[in-house]
Amino acid sequence: METLVHYGQKVSQLYDAFNRRDINTILNSLSRDCIWEVMGQPDIPYAGIYHGREDVKSFFTKLADSLDISEMTVEHILENGNMVMCSGHINAVARNTNKRFSSFWCMTYEFNENEECVHFRDCFDTLACARAMK
Image (tube, rainbow, N blue to C red):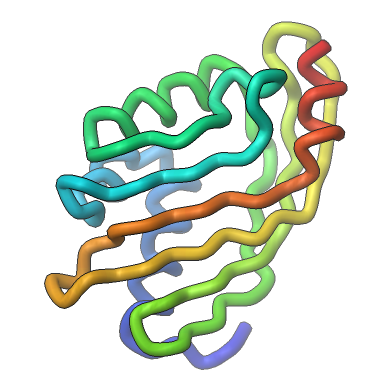
């Protein structure tokens, strides 16, 4: 993996927290008015635009209720100023159908002067995920 500097290291720690299911660490890294975007509405139960920590917390609840994630691997983390772009892949099973799916993903993070995430966006193969949900 690339040599990570300030915000890239922070994002790497957030992925470590996610893989430990430590959602509070992720929530505590967000600004109070963070915008959290996940593609795929309406076929993907956790997709949507979330505003603020409490709303993002509901995203993680919906995600856990929808998917059993067996692998979430980060391949690249690239940093440019207060922006971080990550790519990787995911393997999961839709809980409602027991169907497997995998996808490459790209996630972006923007941080403020207080080192809080103010904007997150997740792009992935929404068609593969939606098909697994049906």
